[in-house]
Image (cartoon, rainbow, N blue to C red; front, side):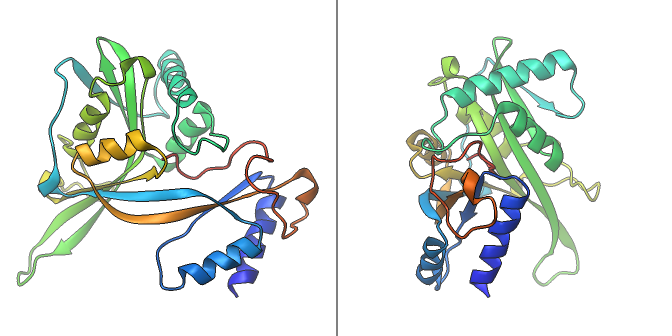
Length: 262
């Protein structure tokens, strides 16, 4: 059944015009066996993705005094500001340490994705210039207290992307942005009007295992690595768009179709 499902996904991806398919393999007792199935279907192990988590007890502070933060709604910002944000993001992507051997999405593609998923985008300003940005998606839920009828609100915050403009690197900008989203002043649930206490907020993030600066950042900010997951890649050649089981491997296709920039 697994083989047939994977073949169906590949065929549909090719039919819809995608040029690259990524598969993030979760940890399980059958991981080795499933890896052999992916290999047989033409997937290539691209890299490993690290999962990080930060609880309220692990949080750190390191905000530069000159940093300012503004929350941006990608779908509602003015044209001029949108161009500034896209330009800053393009500069960041030019020096990205993620998935170095594979094509990265464009700034416009990332902004479109964040708008679609209704992500919160915090823009960091250093001396009135865009120094970096961080996009995150939040999901809140209710959890009953043990032995009590009342319940408290808890929230999970997932960092979708974090980047610093090259000229502002090595100035603790990334750590400052991480602190900012870890301690939101007024973070409300999308489905209710109950304010979420900062004591109940858990932050998760993902990084490419080959991205040493990202790993160092998460460690410095108090994150704990909770998982290491293989990322598999399948490129569709121009001659293979008929749903063939063969994938020519990374680097032969065109633009990347990525779900998350890590």
